Length: 210
Image (cartoon, rainbow, N blue to C red):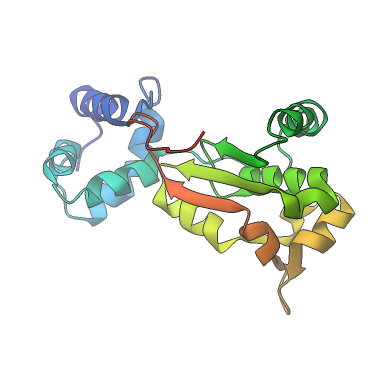
């Protein structure tokens, strides 16, 4: 199989842009590098054969695989910690007052990746409400277009080093060590605060509640 041609590359770029709003117009080397092994190992003679197969696959399986291969998922616990500080010090106090009657609070994490960000949001909320938590109905909706990362997120298992930046009392409360390993798993208390769903931001919003 030859190199990725400009025609093949632009066809893939247009498909991703139209279907998912993902712009890979300046990432030809990344597209080629990530797709090469898959395209070759699955018997396609050219990249064009592959993208035509994706476009004509009514099951959507090939399209889902393409998205999983090409989307970048870079995240970690407490990434951009200032955002979470602002959430706890400014946003949540405002929302607590605003929703004081209904006591119903939903937070949407639109690109959840492998779960570090929505789980961090859930920890911030649980820590903020403290003993009042039982009087509130709080949930974090975590969405992503990649089914691969959503499976990892729902499993809720991470390397112990991954939670190093978290406060000690969060580690003790929200994670438990997996015996005989260097891995840990989120507790049911934390997992129950997050709802994971596959969602393409280019589609119409299906949300019934604010």
